[in-house]
Image (cartoon, rainbow over all chains, first blue to last red; front, side, top):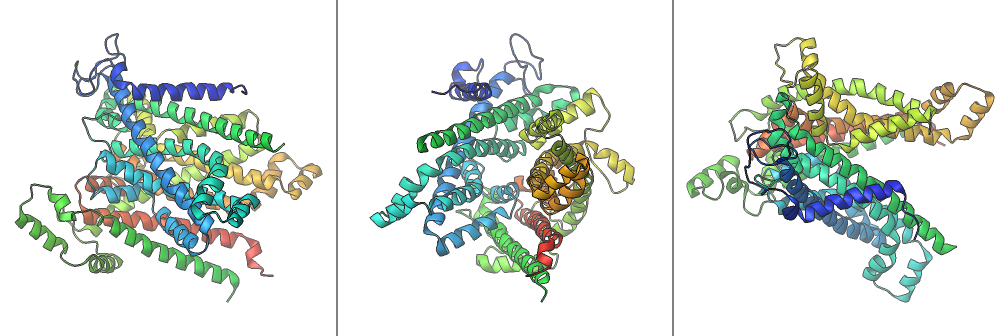
Amino acid sequence: MKRIPLSALLGLTIVAAYFLAAIFAPLIAPYGMADAVGGVWEPSSAQYWLGTDSIGRDLLTRMIYGGRTTIAIAVAATLLSFGTGATLGFTAATLGGWVDQALSRFIDLIMAIPSLIFALVVLSVMPVTVGTLILVMGLLDSTRVFRLARAVAVDITVMDYVEAARLRGEGQIWIIFREVLPNALSPLVAEMGMRFIFQVLFISTLSFLGLGVQPPMADWGGIVKENKDGIVYGVTAALYPAIAIATLAISVNLVADWILNRTTSLKGGRNG
Amino acid sequence: MHPVVKLLAQRIALGILLLLAASVLIFGGTQILPGDVAQAILGQQATPVALANLRAQMGLNDPAYIRYFHWLFGAMHGDFGTSLANGSDVATDIAGRLANTLFLAATAAIIAVPTAITLGLISVRYQGRWPDKVISAVTLATVSVPEFLLGYILMFFLAVEYPIAPSVSTIYDSMGFFEKLHAIVLPVMVLVLVVLGHMMRMTRAAILNVMQSAYIETAELKGIRPFLVIFRHAFPNAVSPVVNVVMINLAYLVVGVVVVEVVFVFPGMGQYLVDHVAKRDVPVVQACGLVFAAVYIGLNMLADVISILANPRLRHPK
């Protein structure tokens, strides 16, 4: 086992802390998610570590539950975008020909419209539920995963071992999942961190605009929306999500960098 | 036909085709509901009569493709229909707001583009040393925070703690040019910070790519000062990728304004779109979606056109 570099260790610790806080939110949070426990925008004190929000709920509690919602939605959307994007990307690269052309041009078209605008257009008629949000965010972002997966897989499909598998008479499904997928994994895993962060920013933006997670459920973008009017009175409640999102983003990047380095050096080790 | 003209014609035709296809997607995006739009607008408690009236008003009794062509034909003639929320003419509303949004985005671009290119040149000159590291750390921080949070951070420090700029950027037609400029200081700063990071990083990468060429080594061996090597020899050869980077970021800027406008209550396209998405005002959403897509596709097309024109290799066919 190689020594983990300090930066990756730091990133890993912070990411793990966020995920644990998200999973065990009801056990950690000092109060109930929607309970009004104090006055409006009380400053931080021993009783309310981060103070209270616009309707007197404990802000630390809101941040912990908010992280739970934000992270859960971002994870689900990332998994959906990788499932869809990678499968379609590998299929396009392995089959080639008109399938590749049709898929690639369609993806080009979707990417010609900015994601946020397209999401807003779709959300104007869809009911805004957690399920719809994950579906819209995941599918829109799968276009980027598709491009990466296809680019990586095109290089793999010309390898001798893929040729050998074809001559053995393996089916397309086998080639995609047993030959291409394992060899394309390391760039995809590194990209996964980036996409996850993108989804965190995306859902926060939608919630901030009032078109994402609906109250009384807490999420980081929503906390900004609920407390933004306090800013002009010098209340910092709306700024805490900024710290949470920025630290999570930087930590995930540190871990993703380390995974990329580690997997590439492993591959080098195996070959000689 | 001259090959450059042919390439340009192809690229412009592709852009128009893309815009047409995008209009299908935007129109289709508002039709994918399992029920129909009228039901979604009025909710579950709607009476059948109200539903029937709204369906007739929106022309929902026609098949989707007829409605699409009807809408597209109107849009091409500057007719986007009327708003469901307040009955006003969508095209008139958009015209005023689009001008405001373009004013905001253009001001941000005028500041961001030269700054990004200068910072890119500086970090190439001092590659791996402290100026490069400082620039790259700061830009990494600004791209890791979403626009709206950056907006509130700036608002907290520059409008509340040390009030040097207004926290709300409402502008009116009656305001003078400099009054307007003062009103939009904070949103412009946010937009500049957001695109600066991307633009500077991509500029740096584009110039570093050129720096590995043999002629750069020759120039260095001749003993030219490092800044001149970069400015005279590397930069001209990196113009095409840099222009591309700038255009892509301008396209991003036009979309980034959506959130920034909401933060600073700026009367532009973004605020208009977001308000009417919440009201399920489909004609307005479709029109805004199409305008945003057109600007985005247009800027991307312009990027390709400029890089075709800037590439001398394409001008002299073999």
